[in-house]
Length: 90
Image 1 (cartoon, helix red, strand yellow):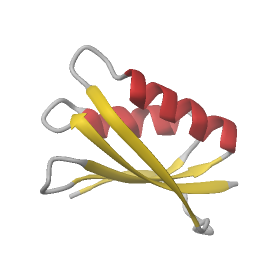
Image 2 (cartoon, one colour; image 1 turned 90 degrees about the vertical axis):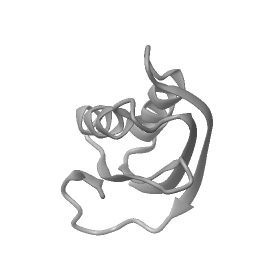
Image 3 (spheres, rainbow, N blue to C red; image 1 turned 45 degrees about the vertical axis):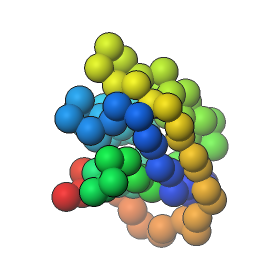
Image 4 (cartoon, helix red, strand yellow; image 1 turned 180 degrees about the horizontal axis):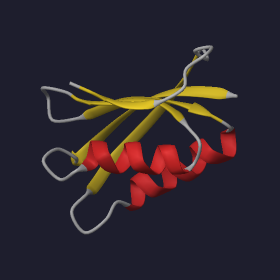
């Protein structure tokens, strides 16, 4: 079990990016949260198995027809015991 703090930049606000991250994270069995920031980036914390986190990072970088990620940085964090969901924060 691992946890990462992430920050994504590019076309990541106003294009359903938070929902995209949440849906893909849940599909991969991950927990955490995702939030828009006032500087136009999106931050997140993602927790689960390394393989699943790596796959989510690949999906985020690939984006879709609306989402264009220019940069995704990930930094290790301490695991949060007992976390059970993947939420969108406001």
